[in-house]
Length: 111
Image (cartoon, rainbow, N blue to C red; front, side, top):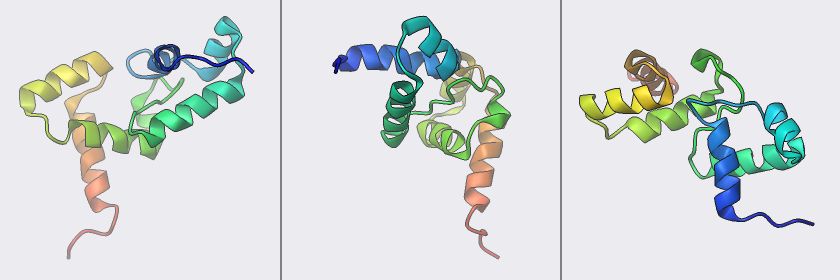
């Protein structure tokens, strides 16, 4: 069994993250790594709080988990930092705000 360094794994995971959003199957074809391995690495990254859409270019189609992770990542950012974050990730601040609102309403809110 081949052991890969954490640095190598992160390099691969970054390819699945915004703004690249490369698909697991494309990375597998290019690198020769099995899709199962890549899905496992993605799952571990998500468990560590990293948003990894992995192939879905349209942010609105990302999983609720990835959207939530973006909301958490941006919770403490001011307006300027949020704008920069969104530019680097290929997102719009309005999208993140909508996701934040959806998270806030997830438990029914306060009547």
